[in-house]
Image (cartoon, rainbow, N blue to C red; front, side, top):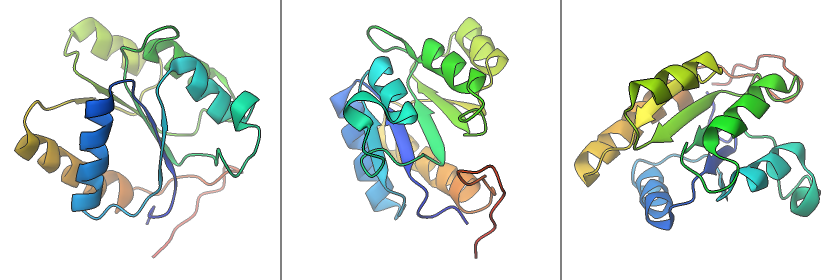
Length: 154
């Protein structure tokens, strides 16, 4: 249903991003991945400003995978900004973090996160989680297009 919609990954850890990319490839997720390694960069991407003023370099994502622990503007602030912006608030944001702190989880949901995923530390669990992510978020959920109209594919 949602194959082809871009996915924005906001992740500052190169190893975590590499593992995510490798696992997306191994479970055959066709969606293009875009990466921002800082919160400020993510807001430029989403707003198509600054280095992302060219809309081809920064297409509207169908989904955002957001790490909470970023240097500078952290994931909590990025989430708040996205959910306050009327043009962005319909984009599902999945927090993808190593923090299992109940306060972080509650705060993420309070600020509009669509889900909270704990990063598994071993590859088999990581791959299983990405397969479940694909099956649920990419194969079954209907997500809005740019203009907010729902689109059903398939």
